[in-house]
Image (cartoon, rainbow over all chains, first blue to last red; front, side, top):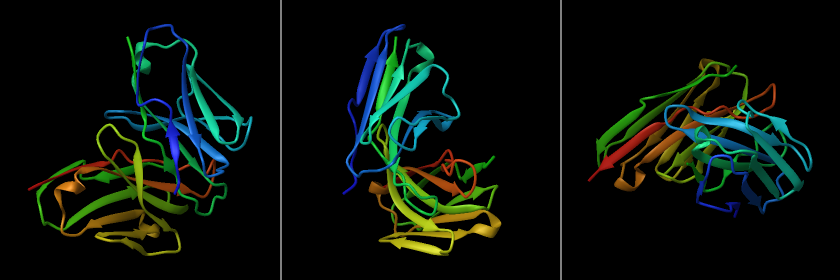
Length: 114
Length: 113
C-alpha cells in the first residue's frame, strides 16, 4: 500500500529558528508536493518537485525553501520561522503522467511558531 | 486559473440519511477529479478518482459522478454513519499548466447518532 510519512506530527519552534519538515514516500513516485492548510484558506501549494534535485515554486513559496536530494525524500525548510508560518503542513506524492495518477498524502505536521 | 467551489460548506445530518456533496470547477479541461476525506488534525485520504472519460466511480457506500462539460462532480454517500463525519475535498487535475490539482475548501460533515 502507498505510504507517505511525515517525520513529525507536532512541532513547536521559536521565532527565528531554522525548521526542517521531512517527508518520505516508499512508492518510487517522481512527484512530491508541500502544501499548507489554514482555516478559511484551504490547501495552498508551497513547492513541488518533479524529480531529484528539481523544484518548482507553488502559489506561496515566500519564506520557504525545499530540498530533494533523493527520490523518496522531500524536505521543506523554513529558513527563519515566523509566527505567520504556524499552520498544518501536508506532504503529497504521485507518479508522473498527466493522465491520471492520484495524489497520496501524509498525515500532516502541525507546526506552531511562538 | 481553475477555481473550485464546494457546496454546502457544512452539513449536519442524522444517521442513515443519503447525502449529496457538490463540487464545481470553472475550467472543464481536466484529466481527472479526485475526492478526499480529511479527519480533524489528519492528512487527506483518497476516496475516489474519476478519469475525465468516466461518468462515475463507486466504492462501497460512496459514489462519485462527473459531468466535465458542466464543470460539476457530486459525491453521494448512502446510509450515512457517524464514522463518515469528516471534511470532504475535491480536486480536479488540469490538462494544462503544471498538471497540479486545485483543491476546493471542502464540505465539513457531521453525522450524529
